[in-house]
Image (cartoon, rainbow, N blue to C red; front, side, top):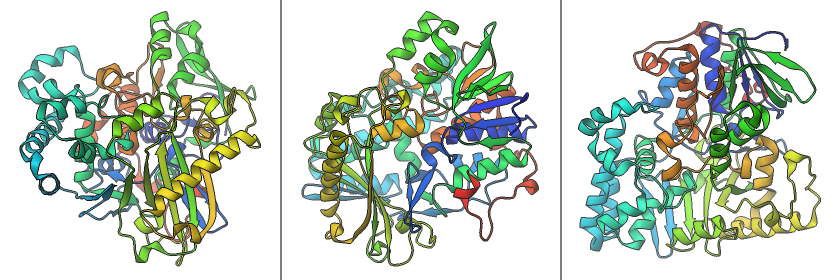
Length: 546
């Protein structure tokens, strides 16, 4: 890649940065994407083991991918809608919630969801109706909200979105209290809060309503595995005259006279551009790569004070049995108890929860035809749970970003093995006999996440999606430094695959000075899709992302 002048430099190749890069490249900007890892994709990348198993780091299921869904529209604007195929999870139960004495299948339907809640908790019928009525109203009115929200919009929103203004920024716990929902019904309604790692007492109603609605439009998995998404965006960038370089760690975002002028790698190489988009961790972007000397004291204090979302511990298993034959196309959420608040309180206060949950997902079940995920007769499985972020819990001092080597640390290895055993034990309560069929076992900690993505606190969700850090309280993609923009989970557009993709289009809109989201919704397609080369027989998305 030529390191001379570019129109735009993107730091980090997560889906938010790649989406912004792809749109700007399709609009004719000369774009360079710099990624410190050896494969592009950020939390959407995959890794392979034994030349047999492929594991997703972050793409487990995606909502709103139907023909007119927001994710589909974003890809359609780049000419990718016919290149990316989505496999729908079981619409009668895309998530299966397992609590002591209770199994609840979450359907892709508000009406059926309400019906099943009432059937499971008949004593809470009126409370459930009140709660679901408000969640649906808040969700419907969120369409009136244009991000980022301008103060001048408030009078209009008071008329058009009263339920959202009343409830959207209050907590899910407040809603449960106001409606009188019982503890077990609360746990079931909030059970998928692991999708944003915030307990009901801090979760905005607007966030949970939007999450449910996205999946109630259908829950999907990309055919070919999670790497398909970044690989196609990389192709858009490269096919439109830009480039993506891996193994390129940005050490500094260059600022002169209050505006960006490019970046410098840890090798000393510089890339010059009037626009820099950082898809890197928010705190590392502003406090380390830019530097506090270039931002206002108020901004520096605000960035330091942001709380990061809780991180995950993940166990990756390769099995010599084929769960395609017995497991429905669902994700399992296994809970030891109905006390969600207690689990999150433990993790927030630095303890591994005594009662815990685990999220269980099998890529080879969700996409049974793609042999690279797992060959016939085998299964690729992931098990996840929330854990504390504190380095000391993991017997680590400074962390991998500071250069600390931790892999051979006996305390780290022992604790990781113990926790992996615990998650496997939990998963065995859902899939009996699982342990006997493990032929590959690997675990990732928050320290692993920090190593590969440089994420503060080892989180994959950016700053916590709590009521005091939601909506307008989150950073806008446009910063106080002229030419510096943000993309990714910590922005006002939010986290998750759908959130960061939409946010990437939003960031590109601010750079381009036009509402690309509106243009795409109206049917616009940017660039020349005939130039795109990705896909087809023999195409390997993992190799194409290197």
